[in-house]
Length: 272
Ligand code: C5P
Image 1 (spheres, rainbow, N blue to C red):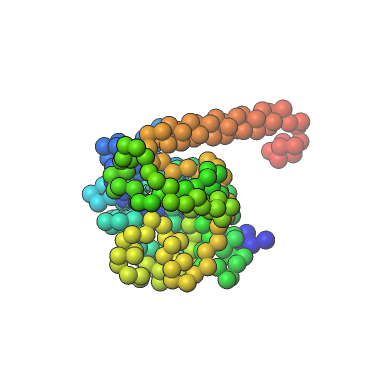
Image 2 (cartoon, rainbow, N blue to C red; image 1 turned 120 degrees about the vertical axis):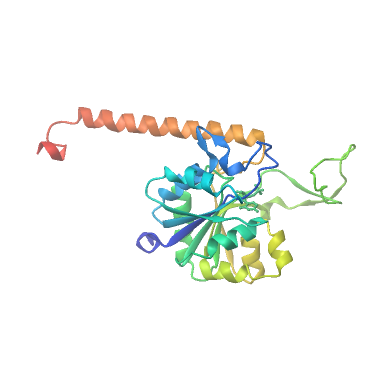
């Protein structure tokens, strides 16, 4: 058991500097309202509840730093600082990594608001248990059968009429979808971000840069609800799941209060 080692060993880095174009909400995705709060604040609350995280650095969209600061202001128990994000995701992560002093970093996309404290803690604990590994990432095994098309998708994402030709069916048994949080030894991530600028610019996650630099990266299966908000449908699903979570927490609090109210005299320390 490594819980004592994990305590406060990590700094969270939240990549929140995306423009949110694909969601079409007219502003940065991290600031879109989700279940009554800016999307970013759900991730920050999860890091505040994690025993492994001592501080957080958020990469903000340029010129939106004060709104990001406001979204972080209501979070209790987490020291949050804000840096200006870069032109691409890995540049945002590199900027947020500069002030980090802890040996471990947990990099997370603000676009995954359903992250939870147990998921963050488990990732950090696994990394501490595995000195041979440079990182541990949240991931989910693929359930669909996966086809490789002959040509890449067009940049705008539009499908041509008449469909795409299948080049190959891939073996699903070996395929996983990478998610965040992605937890790394801070030095391994620093080194990985020194790669060729075009490789860094094209990286869609940090693990691929660490892998390319020769680091061993482990995957830990994440709960199915750790979804990424990209489309309006994702936003509706995330909203429903967060409201469900809030209702379950409220029921839990009520049950606790009920239990305390019906407890026999003497069980409560104040009555002894
Ligand atoms: O665009 P996509 O949803 O894949 O972005 C993943 C995460 O990276 C988002 O949370 C987004 O805010 C962040 N990002 C960033 N800096 C950029 C581009 C994206 O922090 N320049």
